[in-house]
Length: 252
Image 1: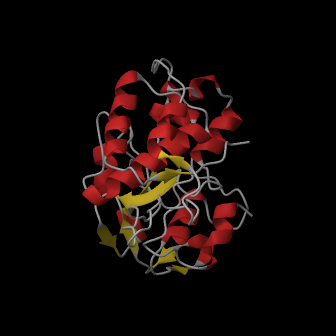
Image 2 (image 1 turned 90 degrees about the vertical axis):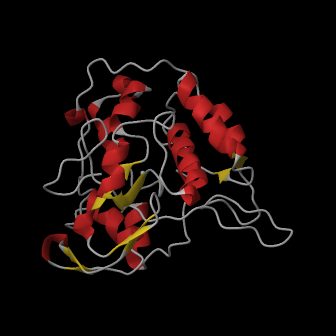
């Protein structure tokens, strides 16, 4: 049973976001250079109470963790190279714990604000989600994509091209890290496609700090690199997010 699937016993509240470390609708092409599904409702860092620092979702309450700017500095430099990239190089939506719910559905269940009903073969009906990219509430799983916060093509460009097939499958279905995959509206997921923060940021102002921390945590978790434009864009985001904290674990 994955860490993420264990978390599905209760709906995740809209205010809970795990910055620690994140699509594709069945029957709908996902974006990211090609297209992809999406999973995970989130919200931006909460406003600090008087005299109290706010932290990115998932950071300890005492703020113990890396400031966003410091976390960005830890990402290795690199030059992007998409040579040989094929979306099929990443095996998507596996059922790792053999409970009939694949990665996409595990994310949808975990991130629901209002839990959906689970039927045969993990068919989901009802439920409610908050797409934090655009602050849109969605009442049907079919209207959501599961977005890889760092798109598959971007991961390939910044290190995944050197991985074997098993490692790429692990990345594409990363349920252990709560913020590597997020459930968002299909519209924003396709708008993003495979672009990095130098080319695309979520349309909701409230999403900027959370997205920056999710992106950086994923890059650090998987030891991926960042190019010059990407780093500059992240540093610009960080200037407006002085209290955002990044917490992550390196993928085994």
